[in-house]
Length: 108
Image (cartoon, rainbow, N blue to C red):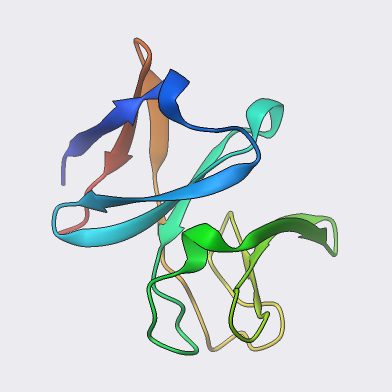
């Protein structure tokens, strides 16, 4: 596994998500300002469609989540586990900033 430079930190809009390719995989990256950066698989496990980066950010049960645009399942940004159906998981990715760059840990 290696850290992949995705973009400059200043190019990520705050409060929303963007999709990026990381080692051939679509990753949804969320910049929540003071609440940090999060990255999960962009593919919605319930539908197989790559659109989680377009979902709405919300808080449920005290946790930050993204609501899938299609059927509105809520995925925890920390673990990727769906609140409504724990068998659905949008795999989380490690993410960090370093010298102004956003880096995502590529999975094998």
